[in-house]
Image (tube, rainbow, N blue to C red):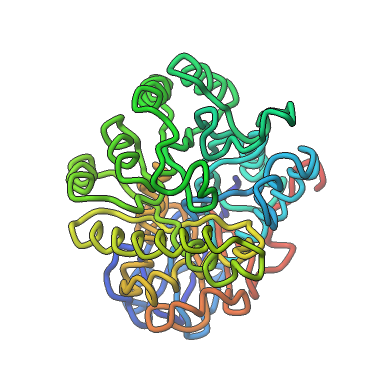
Length: 432
């Protein structure tokens, strides 16, 4: 991804640097050749050249680009499980994913970690975004997911005579687990996503207290992935599944819904981040009847919502880390509503906005493994920046409305927002 050349000054706004520190009023951000040169009070800013690009924050807020830490680029208005694997061919899925990536950037999300992607599309989406062929967040790809046969993601009955080839690797035992990871290694992923536990969405076979992988399978995934310098995460709702993931050496845990004291101790000992993805549970309860979810499924989501919220409070209170991201792409939880996750954690879970914004920036970058480059507005880091109208520390919900997005920059290049113009977005070399 190309970075800007020259100098850019963003001023006339407060600055939230992503570290969790209070905002700096009347601040300035100076960008030089795509990296941050200065972030702090305007009075202390260095002089900029007369020809420097200037962005007026209009009295709003300058903050790091948001990071979606559980991103399903290929989910597109999913209303039932079959929509995920047999509804569309890879060609159309890829086009949908490109649209979702553009939308994420326009919503202020400058980076994202894939939480699983049909047909390994995210590997090539990442390549296209990095080469400026399409707009989108900087991606950490995970490709196809891994689940034991008969587990949460293996829902096609035998009589259909079809597998889950585009969506997941269905494994039986440690050798299958190693084989699946090695296939992902060849495809160029950075993260391996697994399904150690079930979910409220499938209450009869694999509910949210069911284990869907053995510890031995999970350990084989981790050992093989780490050998190839890949990271591992997993959909973990059930208490024992969370602890199995931590004992196996998972690099993050998705959801950690029903974590107990023993699991919390393991989590803290390993300093493993959690991405709760919890607003999905709330919206599944609220809009479930509209989308014909059964009462049994809705009740399961309600239990998951309450248990997950309490787990998040415990994790942060104990000094753990949370990233922000969720299962967007369902009919009742569509792409483009990513910032509602942040509002949910303030209004429902009870976290303060500064904490939530830190989770959505600094911790998100750490989860990506790019904390030294992204996530905070500090000298030397890439200038992935979001400028919004208003004060999200006082009203975090303003991030939900794209009309409030004034500017989205990646590497100092203005890519989206009200202040963006087509001429400032770099075009691929072949069409110049």
